Image (cartoon, rainbow, N blue to C red; front, side):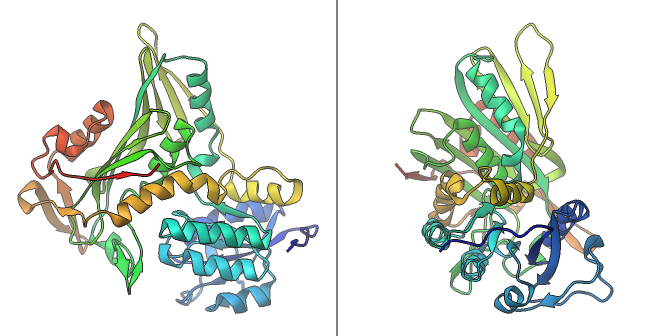
Length: 392
């Protein structure tokens, strides 16, 4: 099947999933609409819009509760899927069957097998699919790789990642799938490593140059402080076939939100990447740190350039295969271990339950610095037994 070329003028776009994270897509589409690149042709959701919703400045557009009907009525050439993880594959197939290109929110699918099915559907359709790992649109990633290629920090000892965010019971109560490993017999895998901090994992793999390939080995420690199914406090160590190691420690039970960071440890220095801020800081002994800020390409704009001029996609599904092996390891791992109440501070505020794990900020940072898992740092709630998976 050969898709029809894009017509001149604004490209009609359909947004599926207008609540929650869908609002950020509405905001990012608005400047493109004002430049005449896109036109919001409609929105689709199982829940209706509140009265008077101006859709973040787009104004009144047709609303649909059925994706097939929405595609038929709007003729959308690009569909943005900002829907629950376990709906990605079936909705993507529907959009592709109607001849619509895709901007698919991360994580790509709920299982590795579903990634293969998505790959096949995209290939058979002849259409394009971009996956919403926004950090991979940042030129900061290539800037780090250029520093490494020029030997600025010597030989690489490993990559450490840290993420300390604060999420309350309201975060997990916002949707039936939030914090779930499975729902109604379907895999969801909504854990800290696979959703909120998915960018940390995917960006670390991009820095190793192995985003398209499975890690050789994955070690996991999954824990939870909240009364949920999935992990909210976890550490991961992955080993690439080239012998590089990346260790990522994250929590959603920190006292406050801080920007997540990846650190490349070298024999003659280090490089810090604050991937949500597009900042790269080079540290070398005897020299002042040097920080640079880098531009970021909109994944939607890159998708439009791809469709009009053949510009390569920044994040096709194949570029998420390494990440999806990590998600698969999380999916098939034993259920996360609960963090006992004596190691938490719990309080009520604004109708929500807040939880912090004692000393978690230091633990996360130490894990990223020493490339260690929580159990190796002596966390009293962590067990040395962990899920390990050979993938290559």
